Structures are given as structure tokens and as C-alpha cells.
Amino acid sequence: MGLFRRRPKLPSADRPPLTADERVLAWAAAGKGDGAGEGVLVATNRGLWLPGRAERLGWHDVLKAVWSGRELTVTPAEPLAERDGYLVVVDGPPETHLLVDPGDLPHQVRARVTGSVAYTVHHEVPGGAGRIAARRVSGVDGLTWTVRYDPGTPADDEAVVAETDRLVAEARAATTPADV
Image (cartoon, rainbow, N blue to C red; front, side, top):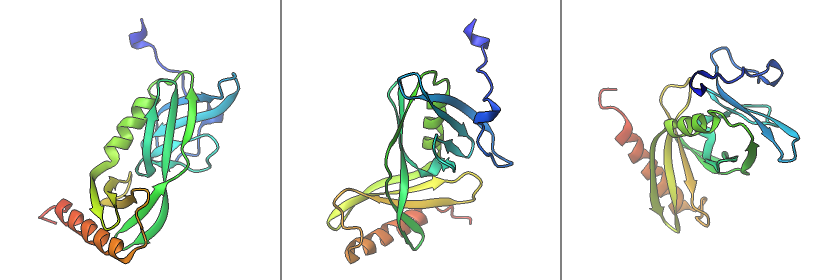
């Protein structure tokens, strides 16, 4: 019986301002646990619309998404510095939403965030470490490179910047097709 049950269509009042090439993949109403509604989370081919946000969070901008079975916690990337060919990011404030009837939303979030990652390696740098990542951005050719330093790593230190520049350049060269 449940095999052919279709999820109700997203109510037009809850539909975010989608771009022409954007389509809804999954959605879920978020609650506060006391029966009061908080809004709707909408996953599209371009990113995730969260309650209280005027703009979509691109899949490449989600550093972490955790599904507890009741709550979805999303940690967005916040830009810290723009460097030659990459962006240094830090964890933004995590946003947690209680999903009473999650449907396919947690699966779509996991699949889309994971699918956006083309390269990720954790490296030691002077005084700490950091994760270099290349992400696919929907509608954009090529990869977008980011570095997220571990807590306590001196991100502005000259030696850290020089080593990070070298590691990112090395990673970019290793992931660029030879025939391009």
C-alpha cells in the first residue's frame, strides 16, 4: 500500500523563490516540538532552503549535515578569507530543525552534500592542520576550492598560508584532467 503513496505537493505558500532551472527534490515541515510550526525546509537541485533564511544555502556551502532520526542539523560554511584560487572557511552557527514527517529530505540532503564533494584531504600545516576540499557547484563549471583549518591553527601565519597555497596548488594539479 505504501509503495505507491505519494508525498503531498509543497504548498505554494511555502515555495521558495526558485530560479528558472531549479526544481524541488524533497521538503519537510519543521516544528519546534510544541506543535508550533517553524517553517519548511526545501531541498532543490541547487541547494537547501532553510526557515528564516532569505537565500538558498548551496550544497557546496554545507560543511556538515547530521540527521538524528528526528532532527536535521546543518552547519554552513562561512567565508573567512579569499586567497589565490581558494576560500578559507569556518563553521557557521549550526541550525537544528525538528522534522516531524521528514520524508525523503534527510536522504536528499546527505546525497547532495556528499555528491558535491569532488576532493577532500586533511593535511598538517605549521602549527596545526586543515582540510582542503574541492566541491562541485550546481550550474558552475569546474571545482570550487576551500580550506577549513582545525581549531587553533594560526590561519594568518605566513608559513601556514605558504604551505596551504602549495597544498592547494598541488591538489588542483592532481585533479585537473591531462587533456585540458
